[in-house]
Image 1 (cartoon, rainbow over the protein chains, first blue to last red):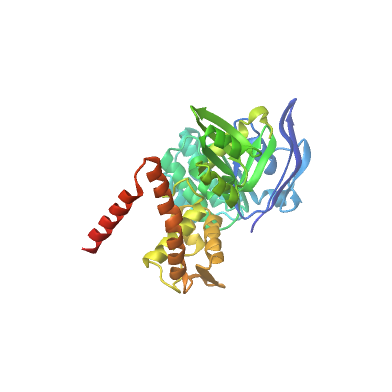
Image 2: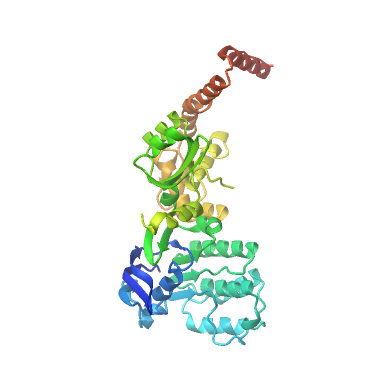
Length: 294
Length: 122
């Protein structure tokens, strides 16, 4: 029960604004994907088009090999949880929203939903419009997880949640994914705390694909090199340098690219400190690169 | 639980090696599944799988199809050899370099080592 996601030259315009710009990528499915991008990079637009909430201005989306737009057979396999929970009426109670989801979602697991409601301490009788921001996000988490949709997407479904709730959410995604493998896309700004559950990472910037890599490969690619300025310069010559800074004669550079055993040895011999960098830092460097292009 | 200095899969591999060296995991014993590791450490199962893959390539673990991963019969002996080799390049060599940087004569280090070895014998 896994779904491939294919974007082909996907373009989305809002009037004169280009939100998605010839975006192409393929997700094999059956994995947890992290979708990362700065504010306004097009994450929400992309998810909306993938879920057929919006029609692409150009290009196409294939989900499980099928065009997604106005294709109910495909869209019922997709669950997108947006920043603001989609409800019919703000006066609906939590229990009514869940009952409505149970009717619409072919794989809905009511017992699991009930246990998640307990986990996030949601009040079934409360009106959705009266929920705090964090509890609204928690409701979104319940709706997304219990739907067990073959393609499940969470668009920053953590806003307002406190740290314990967010960790409960990440744990729930992971354990439920292990028990019921499916394609899960998580868009987030809080990279550091959730990075470990990602198998692959997609980074977009200004509506374009920056990269799509296995998470482990990505972190193995970034390294900080620190040592005497001369030696650092010699070592980084010819490498992709994302950032450089200097303190007295000591220089530190962030390089991007897989370093071989030979290079690592060379660094050690030259007295340089080679350290991996966290995904979040790598993301910052990759999306603030000079001129925005690499 | 994990530090950021090396990829998580490598840290898991090191932990399993540590367990084999200390005798917590014995030869031909089954190790936890990738899903169990993933759930316990709260990491993606693919990350745990990568650690297993690396250990299988190194000959530390072997796979029984459909059952799981097991500790190789000679895993501990292999690890001991590896660690002895690494001891000199990773412990002794940097120590000598450090001593040179702070101008400690080699004799002083040797005396110290002898002293520690003698204390250990008592």
